[in-house]
Length: 172
Image 1: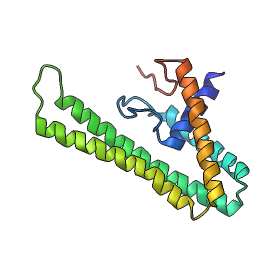
Image 2 (image 1 turned 45 degrees about the vertical axis):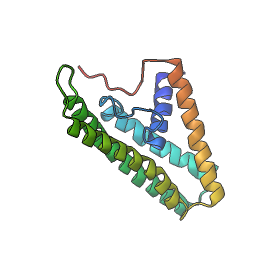
Image 3 (image 1 turned 90 degrees about the vertical axis):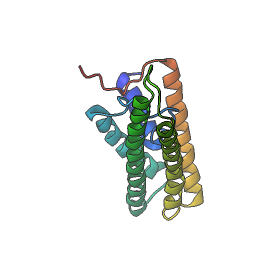
Image 4 (image 1 turned 90 degrees about the horizontal axis):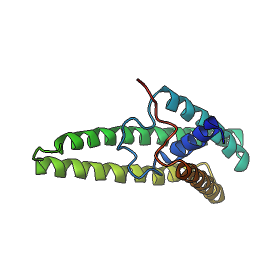
């Protein structure tokens, strides 16, 4: 499989899941950032919207509304990811090796990270609730299955290349 195709599949999964298929999605702040990742996200958003339109049989009005809902919730997830990266960085600086950590700060940051994760998961439920205004229950089910298939494919690609992830910007 070509690197571009693999990058597109991985980015699609990240777009659709907001990175949820990566357990510690915010641990490495270099992941999924930079102009290359953003270009891939835009490309995937467009292709996935086209695919949804065809596979779900959406009319032009539905397609526009679905794109709007998906974009809105993807933006919210990206903001939560940025916030969680910041929290993890702060936690990392508080828990430096060889330095006694302030337990109150560690507890506060840990709680904030967990709250962020809960908010992140809630965005998926809220997204599906918003899609209920546009899609039928069957179309929403199809949407979930499409996303799941894509996530499975990305996991397969990732497992074939352990330790390497194609979306990391490699800047000097």
